[in-house]
Length: 430
Image (cartoon, rainbow, N blue to C red):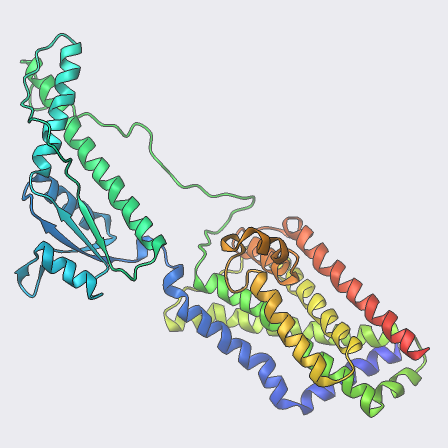
């Protein structure tokens, strides 16, 4: 017990004397999570929150162009621009703006496209009428040699994912426009057949079944949306917690060099008490560090115009996760401080290894977008387990049972590293 208390007191005094190191433990992570949340805010925003400027050139001047412009505006995702500096856009002008990078997207509606759609709809209606024994009465154009297509132009620097998302959105919208025109022609033909029909003839609707997003998971009590704050604050907090290896390893090597470790060992008891003292002290520092950064997410981020961090509904599960991550990070620092003989070796290895483990563990980018072989290694990273547990609590509103597998892995690896460190130091003594 004396060794435990003496170790905690010694670590506290060392930390107080190194005020610059103490400031770095708390101030640098706060700066890190703030910067990362700010620069990644735009990529994390939903498409519904972003409006894209889209240049429109309507060479058709028909219903299709009008439907497209109105639909794009009503979607809330696009700022429809059909003139610049008071001058109507031409296809050549729109392409020049796109090539120069002033705008990201342009859409060109070819001449005769409305007539082509109406003619195709009439042909379908006439075929249906013929099968029903009704004479085809709607006019049909002769088949064009080349089918018309609404043209999309993108900035050459636009990313492939951005192009795919915009292309799919516009393709779905064009399908809806053509479906509406087809239903209109069917309704017109039915009215002609039923001479007694009035203007109140019921409209034909296809949306018999709709689409609705519902909550998932057990115990959902709040709606949490993944955004830059919700990802970066916990993720980089875990990264910062693991950097506790630097002061731990440095202190342990200095203890061996200046003889203070020998004096600690002279106190009655086993070496496990010394390790327990270090563990309790630095785990407490890790938890304090973690929740200091959570407070920034709760109160600091909204002042910068960013979303507020949500902590889920089970706060005990959050504390247990922070404790487990702290145990693993502290144990890793103790192991490095035990294995290496010089500060340069320990600090360089510790810093580089944490960067590697965080990079493959999903701290920088999600594991899902990495190559499969990297994902296999990434899922072995303790930082990945910690981030999964935090996401389960904060994003999925999970409880303690939900995070037990990740907690067990973290505590199991932490215990193993402590046992290895104790074994190595015991052999060194003997």
